[in-house]
Amino acid sequence: MYKPTHHEIQSGSSRVKHAEGLILQLPEDHDGRNTWLLNYGVGDEAKALRKKHNIGWVRETEAAQTFSR
Image 1 (cartoon, rainbow, N blue to C red):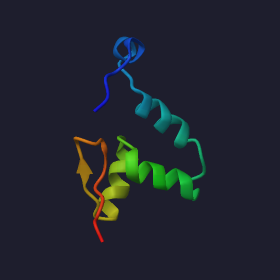
Image 2: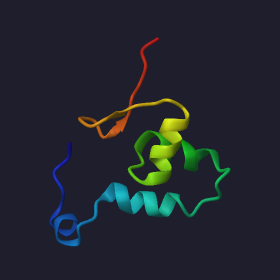
Image 3: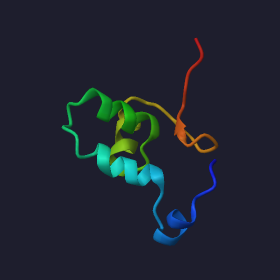
């Protein structure tokens, strides 16, 4: 996990939440949008995407579960 900046603490937001807000403005069929949400998003839509694809969330890395081949 990263250490939040003073601004993040003061605003109650984070760089991930801010980025997610920007990503959500892209069209729903945009591949980069959905990939980012699936891998790093923290909101409801990201959680729904991971659930749909049966992908877990790793709290320590704040990212989607990865699978070894």
